[in-house]
Image (tube, rainbow, N blue to C red; front, top):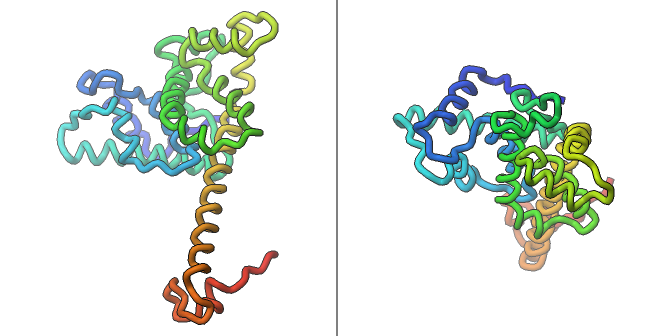
Amino acid sequence: MIFSEKSSPEAFDRLRSFLESTDRPEDTFTYNELLGFLFAIACSPEMIPPSDWVPMVFANDEANYRDSDEANTITETIMILYGQCNQQVLDGNPVVPLSCAPVLPPMDNFFDEAPLGQWANGFLIGHSYLEDVWDTLIQSEWEEELGSCLVVLSFFADIKLAEAYGEEALTEERSIEELAESVLKVFDEAIVSYAHMGRALYIAMLELEQGDKEQLVAEYVGQGEPCPCGSGKLFSKCCGMPKTIH
């Protein structure tokens, strides 16, 4: 499946030109690297505020905006792309962006200008940035699945990395060409699986935090006292009321 950036083609074209201009800092993301990076951010098991990750788009350097209007326009477009990517994750249907569709033969996705290769590099940067979050929260039974997803989704970021993956993971000798072909066959599945794990962990953490808050309230608020939610009702008749399980 392919994701098409439909909201504002002109705005996305301006963003692409802006990112790839020589006026930008060295190592600024290309447009396709940005899409891969945003996917990793959207799948984070922990909410990361834009103020933390937007500077990474420009290698943590000055973006050299022409004026405040350009700064607002570019930032807004980045956030639109992030919102679309995040919505796909919420819907459980993340897909490869149209501009990053793989090409054939599979080995051509390793070229410097290859869209999928750039997407994979952006994804790898994003996941590396969030690696501590994943390592802290990932469940042991998911570790192998996460590792497999990482191999697939970052495979085309660099051919040397791909060769290293092959040497580590394979029990039988296969050519890099055969590996590349196999990776493309499971790419869509890996995107969905990676997003599912991130979202499941995020929801689990929210529920855990909410449970902790409810427990603290129950410990410090008497049943005959006003509910701290501000409803005007007694705690025992409001947030302290036992929940019905349907």
